[in-house]
Length: 299
Image (cartoon, rainbow, N blue to C red; front, side, top):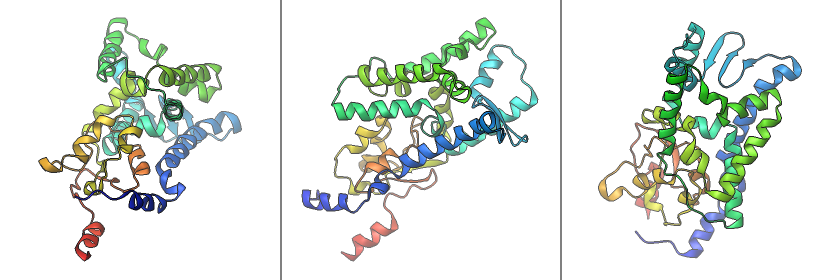
């Protein structure tokens, strides 16, 4: 495969507008704002579309939704789970089995905004530092959360869980939310890139377990157009998930990003001027789009 010249690369870049380069980022931010607006509109305006928070809620007084991570902790703690909680946890679990568990991290979690901002500023300031923690640290901490619940008989992790504290704090207007976000922002900015979400957070580790069966996937379906610019690796918070799909052609590996820690954030789609990536399903193993095949055959 011939590598495009710099002039061709520049022309390809100019073909994409600012909106095309930030489409999935904007959709993620709109989703995060919409979800929290639905929670906030109740206490602020008395319009109760959703009651509760991301841990446990009731939509339109009909649909129960419960955090399965907290439900599992409750089981380890020996606590009674009502039918409503169990039903809500099953509904949420089925949803994440469909879309991929780490979607929670990139599309819903409020801490994502702080970590994304820290990653962006690190690039601007050219701050370089390696992680202090291996990526499997989050799975060890996930195990600890269940052990703590088993030993104490309480949801002890939830007393210090930054994700839960920020969620409740934003909805209830508590100052602690801002302080937690600031600490995580500074940690990711000054200490290590993507340290919290990519290496430490047990919540993300728990939801990644749903990612093994997720139907919605990102595919490097036009990986033969890749010019090895490395932009997708630089922007991805879990860059280790990209290589098998992008460079596995010699081994007949699927172009689908199947790693359970892919967050389906769409960053690689936004940043790639060659339009190598797209959203698809886990059942679509096509490497090259029909459009690109037609272009090649006509040349």
